[in-house]
Image 1: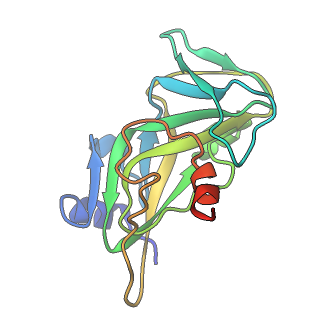
Image 2: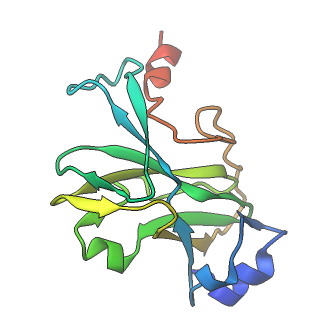
Image 3: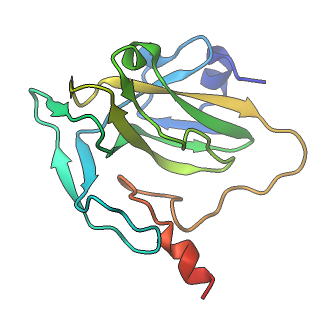
Amino acid sequence: MILSGKQIRSKLGQEIKIDPFDENQLNPNSYNLRLHNELVVYKDLALDMKKENPYKTIVIPTEGIVLEPNKLYLGRTKEYTETDKFVPMLEGRSSIGRLGLFVHVTAGFGDVGFRGYWTLEIHCIQPIRIYADVEICQIYYHSIEGDYDRYISGKYQNNNGIQPSLLYKDFEKKL
């Protein structure tokens, strides 16, 4: 089951944390999250799964920034979220999608117990000007049945900013 907006509000401070929370961003069955003012782009054209890939940070100016097609931008939500007893899911807003802007490539599925900011894998079909603080995506919550273990991964839990891929750490474990 997906929580209603009223249920999201009633679980705040208990099994759900959204900080900052703004009642105006609450929807019938989701909550809109805003884009922070920083983006990360990888420096190399060819990326390597087994290595830490170098990247640079870009600050989105007040007048916005035009994103290029066929380029990956990592962003993050302005809101910090925590969940317990619910599975958080992230989707783009339809108004954003109708402009050809995608907010996640494959990572819209969260784990019960996740705490942190959501890293967004942003790409576009055609050039588009984006702005910080825009309500770019929405989080919604599924109930979970049965016993479960909370997400405790050291890679992405309790993050403070945009998280580039840490997949290379999985290869280090296998050595």
